[in-house]
Image (cartoon, rainbow, N blue to C red; front, side, top):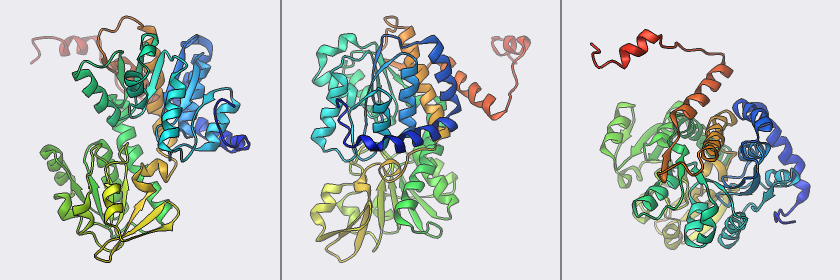
Amino acid sequence: MSSEIRDASLWESGEQKIEWVKRNCHLLRTLEEEFTKTKPFAGKKIALSVHLEAKTAYLCKVLAAGGAQMFVTGSNPLSTQDDVAAALVKEGLEVHAWYGSTPEEYNRHIRAVLEHGPNIIIDDGGDLVHMLHTELQHLIPGVIGGCEETTTGILRLLAMDREGELKFPMVLVNNADCKHLFDNRYGTGQSVWDGINRTTNLIVAGKQVVVAGYGWCGKGVAMRAKGLGAKVIVTEIDPVKAIEAVMDGFDVMPMVEAAKLGDFFVTVTGCDKVIDEEDFAVMKEGAILCNAGHFDCEIDMAGLRKIAVETKEMRKNIQGYKLPTGQWIFVIAEGRLVNLAAGDGHPAEIMDMSFAIQALSAKYLVEHEGQLDKMIIDVPREVDHDVAIRKLNFLGKHIDVLTPEQEKYLNSSSVS
């Protein structure tokens, strides 16, 4: 089987998960109905690398309903759910992914979906775009453009664009209001604590939680920690975000000070070695660390393994490290994305909005093939508003509309 799925008998479980998502993704369901009729991706190949669980699988089915030939892989070795991947294979999609793939296998899967010569790229973290530009440049002429799902991927794209290296348009899906204001804040906020709670089975109330980074994801994690009864410390490098955290009711201090106090640590910065050997050395007995940033570099796992005098699996997905000073600290999911490597990711209703933006942005690229003169593209305002209006209608909520006189007033240079 070209998809390399290890156990085809898994598909029934995966199919149930996808069906549950479909019941709760009302925007995607509407788009699936529309795409089935209009076929906006007819004759197009889409390569997709996103955390391969049920919400992503349903997005793939929606794009396939629009006529796309789908080539699918995951964006993290520990977030792929084999039963979901098997269910997509049963539906006729080509999948290259499995849970726990080695770095070599992961890269092979990325390469496999790209070697089909995709016209549209849907990326989460930038691995597809990176490989195209470094190893498979001969395929770039066939690429219309792509969409990037997450902050980390956007940072990589912006760096490429500054250097003049980016060779096709990329839509910054993460920057859409209907994505980052809801997915990053409410989705990450809930799913991170879903992952922590189901993995540790420990109480959060009364504990001290340290959140590294106060972007939209960090705001959501801190807000939910507060709601669970924790005391929250925020660490930041941005003085404006630090002030915002203080005014939101949280303490702010450098990580080396927060390290002495925390019971739970959540990194969500997109940066490297946010918690390092200096911080490990002063942590309390039993401190629990996890990462909610895209790549597993925010907790310096290599440094931790180097200084640990003993390691032990304490519970599924929890690894213990005994430090030279005698205290044990624990890391969830090897420092990988805790909400996916130790959970099911964002709630379906949240990803419904994000993936509706993805689908409509991909459609926008096809409709404007050859017409885009910039490599970095913001999600068009009309796409953002379309998703917001669809969501409001489903919720049974309605808003005011400007009268012609009000529009004239707001657009007049003589507003007073």
